[in-house]
Image 1 (cartoon, rainbow, N blue to C red):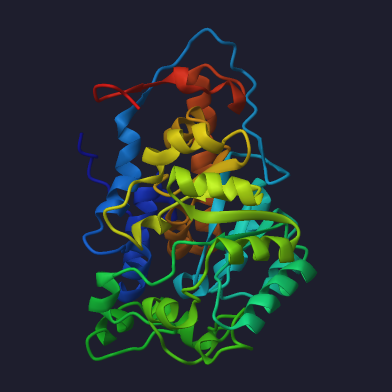
Image 2 (image 1 turned 45 degrees about the vertical axis):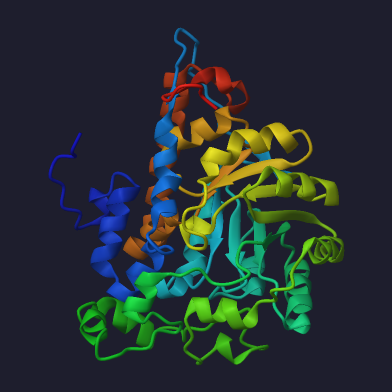
Length: 395
């Protein structure tokens, strides 16, 4: 059913993630918006990441006494108020001048895990010093071994709670929107993109006159961390170590010595291998559809991976989550929690910390309401008995 006409012009008019996306599109220059919004090739996987949830229907129970609801879960040794994590994403101060500071503050307020990217625009040390909530460093494995070691030491010194190695970016995905817009970091204004930047003066003034944009965790090691304009695909293709393998991942886990997660696991075989080397958690993720287009959606892979390794590692579903019902469907299949990036990035771009907090408020309300409507009072009461599949044979 079509939504009624609803022109989103302010934060108060945002009632779901799609509304934040519309407001972000109004407020960002188009190269920056399409960097957030875009994916690889035909973007079929990005679309499937969310639409896959539609294949499963929730079956509620009633008369369950749901006045008091406990939405908390324990992830990577930390109890969190919601079964929701804010996935690590890069370049956040490009989307709003508050950047990672806004997202970390919102995560702390709501009692959620927050991830900062190796390609973050605020330093690991500042995040560690200012925010007390559970924090993970999302780790890219670089050719520069000194940089690799430095990232671990900085996370350790800043009392980060976990390291998450991203394993699906051996090369950059074919992000055609970024190719068309000429998006680089930092942005390089061209004759073709000039009008887009000029048409968003608020963004332009923030970018030019607030704190200088840089990749704070890389700037002391590579020129690409400061003033050198480079596309994200070029960065991945030239800076990351394509020899990364299971032996290197296991060595990184040992070097870190704390809670360790692999992000980008999609196959049962890889999930089993991850369990064998002793990781604490895996994130079922296809990088938001930004790498291999035509790959499966995380929700499509969730059940078989949980069946294979769910008794040995925590299984986090990453990607495509836009609604509280998506969270409940993933938990019903056995996920420990869910995580997402665009679900808060649109809100960050729309209105900074206030936007992220409103998005989390809406998602929290949806999760609580939907649990009550499902007739469950705690997350561990959700099971596959709550789901039915729309196509013959189920899963």
